[in-house]
Image 1: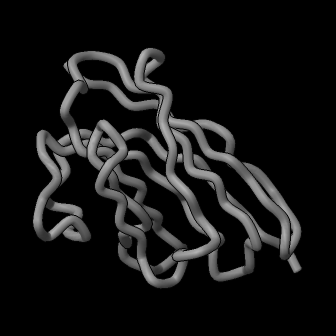
Image 2: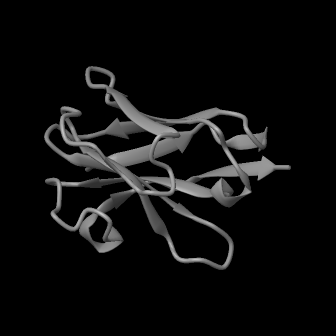
Image 3: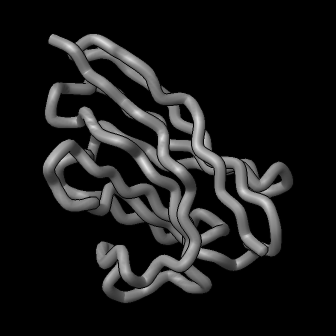
Length: 124
């Protein structure tokens, strides 16, 4: 059974940085790992995805150049480094996993495992 647990959220000022972590347990080798986010009153949206080896990363246009995914494979840890944060980045951030990297990787329905989320709030 795959379990995902996010951490690292918090309150940060505009222009600041945060690093989110996702601790994975179970058999996640070979899984595609993604980050999604959901702002109040909005649908959950894609942020970034990569395969487990870290060789095929994709980012939403809204975060490209500011957010970076990384991982520690032996520790089964996934990270999202977020820089130059602004108010539009305020959301609950979720870690998600799919057995393989889907062609429609931005479709949240393709991911079968989800964490509980961690709140990121960017204040002006």
